[in-house]
Length: 154
Length: 204
Image 1 (cartoon, chains in turn cyan, red):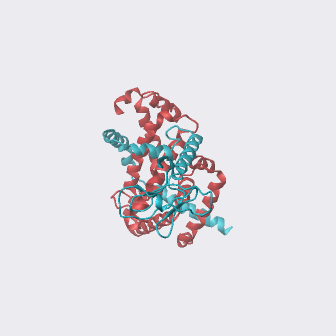
Image 2 (cartoon, each protein chain N blue to C red; image 1 turned 120 degrees about the vertical axis):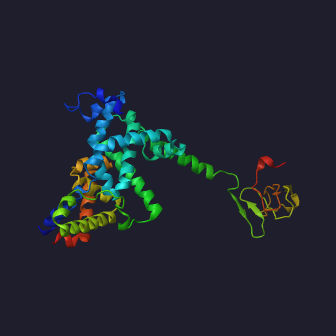
Image 3 (cartoon, rainbow over the protein chains, first blue to last red; image 1 turned 90 degrees about the vertical axis):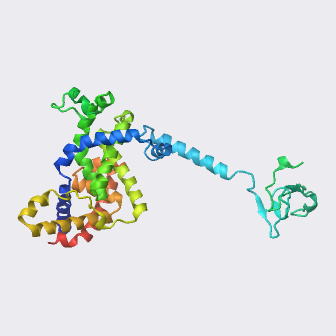
């Protein structure tokens, strides 16, 4: 019972905030002030990204159904993941002495001072060292190993 | 817009909000003026009780009506205009509050209402008769604003819509895009928090 009384008291207190208004004069002038604001806004060009942000966060306001936004966002996410997990340079690892081993095939590179990309067959080693391991050429640019790309090999 | 006031359709007999929307989209801009007059005070209240700052509220209110006007062609009448424009106002105010939070951290009470606009209508009359009561009211107002600002924006919104503006749970749920249960639960939590911070005023 006491709790209900407290809630009633609280609501009465909060209703005092209804009186926090700028007064009738403000509202009687508001429409005119709004027209002036609109004229200023027409002259101000909205940046292109504002529209993108609006469509993303308030699709209902742009007349786009929520389901369409969810679908588009999911497609974008998948495309983004696919882009960042692309094959180039993703599956090579740096060895302690600056050599690089490729998990498929074999590639070892060493840091040299020469800036040009060279192919140095003499540096080719095998990662597993076993027979049947395919030997591949190596690219070195002098600043560290370059990701292996079979399309560029000879 | 005021240039077309003469063409205003049948306002004395009270066209519905939706009729005014159709009329505005059809090119009768005076109908939008009427929509502004119908909602300006209520939307001002919502935005003000979320921001606790009159100057920010004025800017936001302009922005909300401008945004609603530009978006009217996409208004399909799936919800009432009333719900739709309230949603615009609340979403815009939430965005604004996020920006303000990033810009200046939590607001101190000293930063609120320093724009020279009158805080209360009521104390003007009270102040003439009873300055002590006026001071107490100002103190109470500060404490109320402080307590409201301690709530999250979602809790502050349900308190504003339910306790201050007197909307029903179902209407609030539509505006906020959640269930009535969520509204009730947020309200319950917000009341508990406010009871804690306003305890001494409740026992007076």
